[in-house]
Length: 81
Image 1 (cartoon, rainbow, N blue to C red):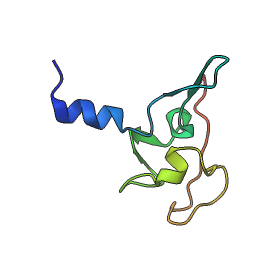
Image 2 (image 1 turned 90 degrees about the vertical axis):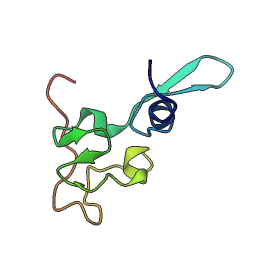
Image 3 (image 1 turned 135 degrees about the horizontal axis):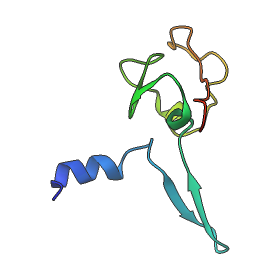
């Protein structure tokens, strides 16, 4: 069984799929980071080894173009995803 702290981390994980209801159906949103070749683990990648900025994790900003502090590394889709 998962501990309370672990469940809270999962619940607040911006890299996890999100579900929404608009009255017509369920919408699933996944972070662009989930499909990137540079992803190391949830919230960490080669571009942002100290943590991916929330605007990128939540898809508010596309990382197909340079973003401050990205070490010159941008989103590249992982083959097969």
